[in-house]
Length: 197
Length: 134
Image (cartoon, rainbow over all chains, first blue to last red; front, side):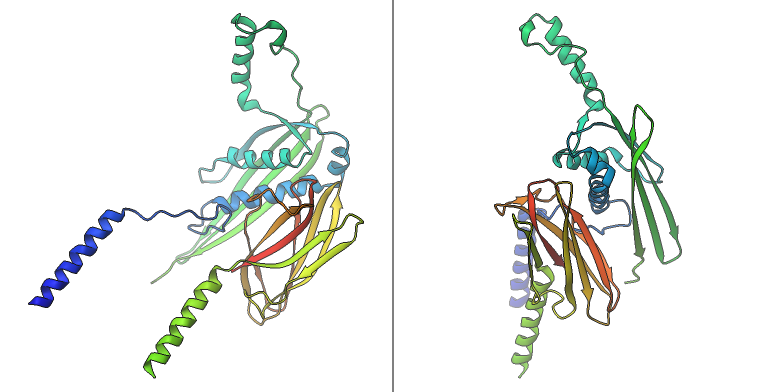
């Protein structure tokens, strides 16, 4: 009888302790390989960006072109042809950041055009900004190149296995001549097997 | 006797769990100012110790960016699955673009060699390390 009481007290103590401690939260390595599901994940995003940036900045004609100057590029949307919802802007953001940090390219940000326009309008029309220090209209640099691409997937499954294949293609086109200066591809294959245990 | 067995099992478990978390630097390659290359290969890395070998490293420049190539060899008769990562350093030994490169999964079939490549994130890089973990 005494033993049952002691065990009950210990059990209650454990229950209370687990309630008080709350959910367990920990920080992990953001660059670690993530294999929670076969769906598109952080490892895929990081691998795509790393491979394509390496390819682009080491392609001989691009090396030659960027040796003396930093061409201006604008990033168009990536067409998502997969069946998943994938934030492709996040991929191009990473690619853009890596290219900027390489010191080889500069970018015009088309996602900020409206905000820039509003700020310039404010500087010109509000009467609050010294006209000699206001940013003037018509002085922005036009992009020389456009970066765009596609993302597609092939998914196959049987009763026990799911196979996912992703292909990401990125292209760099000269806006004036229409010539495609570079294209790079990254392929990813992931296989998931159902566990029977 | 039972105690000894228990202790041994416990120790083995602890050491295995420690090995599972280990990140190993397997090679360090530095391109010196005069263009010569200093290469240090760690052959006694804890992880996959008797199985994985850095067969060779190569460096070159694409423009002013360091390009690295590492040949990783599987010396065992089992396929090895592990992860690798490049770590880039500047002349002063500061790491450049921390977290800029992800861990990459890699599988090498028995007695095969695989080549992995990487390009430095910017021109300040003059050396790299290759890390592996399982």
